[in-house]
Image (tube, rainbow, N blue to C red; front, side, top):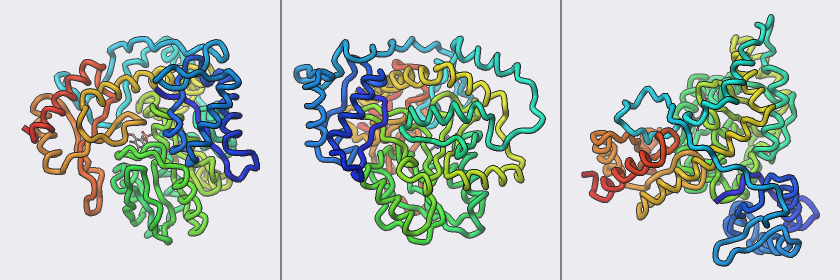
Length: 459
Ligand SMILES: Cc1ncc(COP(=O)(O)O)c(C=O)c1O
């Protein structure tokens, strides 16, 4: 179970940590962001994520019990009391089977990571947004920052979904996270600049950075994400995925976030935060974006690729306004732009609440898919299964390779971790994406094949 609002505590404030937590949870319940009947995370899990002691969380929960906001159900956790907060959102409609995946044949089940479920997108709201957007007259000249109405709507979306204030003049509409990273690199890097990349990590980010002349420096990750101790002092930029490390799945804990920013301030480096699937978290509340902790040092990259579809081709970059202005000028030099019809369609989806509804629905859908995968792979060592659209099965490299080969022969496409490394390999395993399979039954069938193969030594 999850709660879907970002919360954070600030040790710099004089207000005690548990009181800060009480205030934020109370506000979320009062505003209906946390709905009646919703289950709160276990105190140990929330404490670990926020980097506070468990006592801070139990004190906050006790206070909210006493005020009547929360109730305990014997042996099954802490819930928002019925009747005090807004009702739980409607249960998702079953997705209509209408997915377009060109790389897998119809007889194959695709467990490769990277794609969301697009079958649920064929809704009246989706069609209406595109119909209205297509009536836009062509523009004489486009602002390289993007359509003004979309920038306002996106700043608001980032604030409510990722818990960080986002000034509109620091927001530039891109074609996606990768395009945002490319524009950032084109603006700030000089040939030969050293850029830290997560190892293992997102290959396209590496390709983009190398394409702009960066010397890539692989930086190790562990089960929590980027290892900050030991980052070299001479990096111009570090690229990271703190909400859900790609592909290992760690969620960077608060103390490490603070250490990363302290390192960046000390060395003068910038941090590129790729928040490609930060909306999807299944155990505890998502942490606010890293950007919120230091808007001067972090450039935040968001995208519609996971929450809607890669077809939309819209994303956003947020940073300090001077830097974003430089990026906008560089973008004009490069004649790089985002098509206006998708921008306007996204604006309409945001302004009418359709995107938020879709994200909530998909969070439920992916949580159910994730449960199917976790249950079917029961007994295998899994990592990174609390967020996003993929997880990792920890198996030795030769076995992982055999499983990929044999699974393909049985109509299941799956990947090993090997292709996410550049340097000498540390982690080995299988990456299981659960976004693009057509539904739970298909997913179960594919995962049963993977489990059999892993348990049978790849045969
Ligand atoms: C780590 C990571 N970042 C970003 C993206 C999406 O990038 P874009 O918005 O450029 O489509 C993906 C998609 O697979 C990803 O895995």
